[in-house]
Length: 119
Image 1 (cartoon, rainbow, N blue to C red):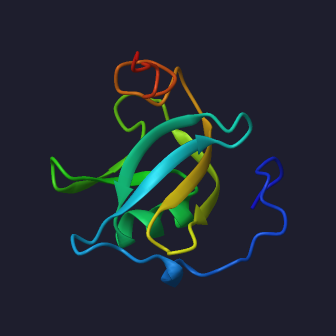
Image 2: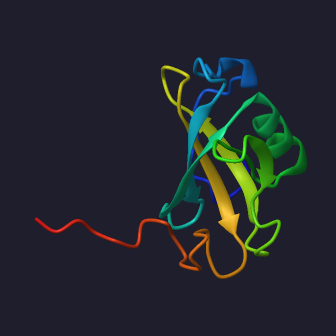
Image 3: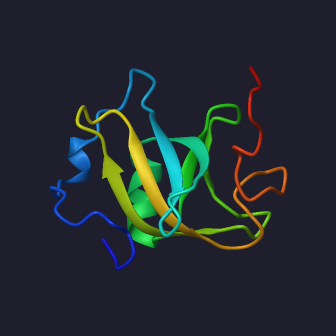
């Protein structure tokens, strides 16, 4: 974990601690490592997690296209990895990043969570 990602005192585990679902996927909540703002939610399989850890850039699995994709491949809005947290059950991730470019959302917004439900 690099400086700025506030996870001092967390247990360090191997990628084997991740429990992928029956479809081979695990939800990945992408968070700005400095502000802690939630930027997006995507899915990872074992290969996209491996590539993310190796390249220090985020890779995800597209359920719609049934393929791996590196974040920012076409938009230039890349994410530099700062750390990955796995929850107590091993079935969800928080991927902490430094967001590059204008934002994480395909719409061009900084975050995919720029709308609030009223009521």
